[in-house]
Image (cartoon, rainbow, N blue to C red; front, side, top):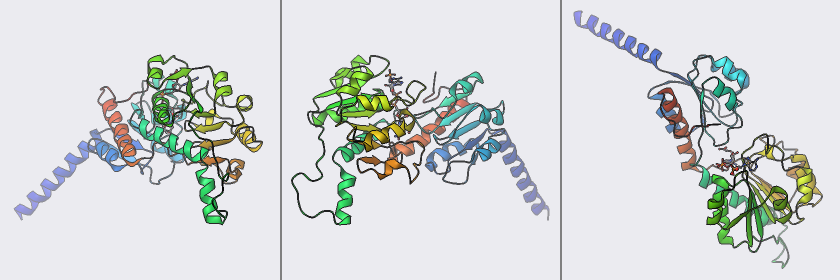
Length: 346
Ligand code: NAP
Ligand code: GLV
């Protein structure tokens, strides 16, 4: 009798201790339950973690409701984090951590004003994204998807000398719009294909980095007029928004192949579609579109000279696992008031 009482008392005590521990732990809201579990496990060791339940972007209303009272937000590029979200969170919010290198979906200025630190995941995804960019470029210029369709629809009648010919990288002129982490790795992967010239357009000179791949800095208009391939790998900012517009496509060579693995917003998509339809340019490979997903009735999807991928630049397993952990470690560091692994400073 006495022993049973003691056991019940001990159980009550342990329950109270664990409740007290939980209530003293920081609260984190995670908008993507489908991130690799290793990141979530890191957070759960010392935080109360609440996650949105579906492997789809969290609805705005749900986000505004669930963020209330949270100390940190673990989000993705599919979430718009603006003043309304920060207001809804409350003054205790210390950190917004995105599992992406792009952070144009976060109002960083508004976060800074409120002393909220912003984490992101650069570097770890650079190689994966550069690799995907090369894959997309090669699939577009050598018409892989178009050719593959012919195998299945009976269009392949025999080997044919000029059928399904594309435009090689060898001896071509390649222009990179953006020459940051990813742009430089794309250039390094293009070099073995023996292009005649690699150029780049940036705000800063980046001379030292350019020497490694023998690239020349040119201005935007020069790049448009010179290039057989234009590869977009810049950040989306107010300056780069729709910089590839009708006037830009007008300046390109008719054999130009346009590759975009940066953000759909860098392109006026209607103008791109018109340039492709009218054969003003030769083709396009897009990993990013506006909107995402691209609607099935979008005119771009009706064109043979376009390859569209569903924003899979960094989608290699180890990369995504590490991105999940970095986003978590960024939160833990911010909550501890320590240096974050990757913090956005603007
Ligand atoms: P980064 O190292 O910051 O490089 C960004 C580049 O954009 C820099 O060279 C920068 O120029 C250039 N840039 C910015 N504003 C410009 C302007 N107004 N005119 C010309 N150039 C400008 O970033 P990163 O790691 O390479 O990533 C680049 C972007 O790729 C990300 O922001 C993201 O949107 C996109 N991304 C997409 C995927 C995907 O899945 N498709 C995956 C990862 C990243 P400076 O050299 O002068 O600074
Ligand atoms: C992907 O698009 C990223 O910004 O990480």
